Length: 325
Image 1 (cartoon, rainbow, N blue to C red):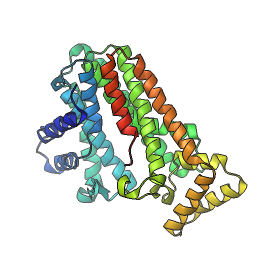
Image 2: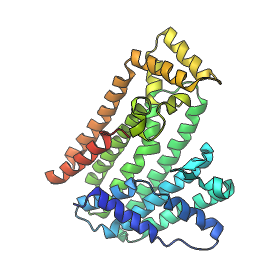
Image 3: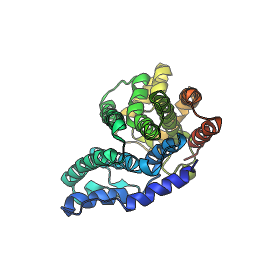
Image 4: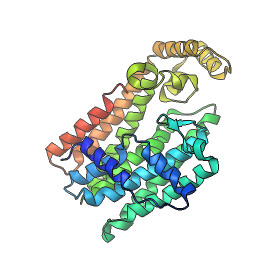
């Protein structure tokens, strides 16, 4: 089995060699730019990992893995436009450098490029199935983004709704990458589906941990401002659970902070976190996170893989969830 870091390096090198058209330059330069900004390359590396787990040819899976990375970056370009975000990985976003129209169109062509890459080197007998998984995954990510935007305008969001949103926005791409990699690597459909479930629940657990770290993480290790979700009124699991469990006084205080237009950031973070602490919200969120991690491991146990390869996946999952950043 190849190390995850080695698979990430393979992806990084392949991106530098990706054959992206040159003309018109205004269309394709933003594509090259966003792909050059780096990142962990986790999703395409997972596709290669799944292929390797089932004894497949990692080189044959490289083009579908690149498709996953191009698709992921397409979503980032459009997400940044919708969020009016000025920075991505510390650099100017595509729409900041080239304008909103260029960002939309370059994002659109990235989606097409992703499909072209997904179709390369996949055996004819698998192509229809692989494209079906990819299309379902892509639709799910778009649905998750729409739900996330809808939640910003809604006063009430259920916890089950939130969990489904993060499943679609974040987790289905992890699961889809693993499933495609498994299929290309020679896995049967049942094992590929179990690996999808493993990735899906692991992704939900990862996002829930991110919610926890945003409030309780060490800012020096977390890599971004702690309390950002509280300051922006983001409807995370922690906020929704607090609103569910709060008594009348706590509920009014929470809603008062949510409705304030002018506030001291540190004061707001302290006040809301104090309510979370009183309601033991961190423990509830941790329990929910562990529940999805357990579901991931249950799916893993059912996969027809040797124990040493399951151990590899367990170690990967543990590394993903035992983190401070």
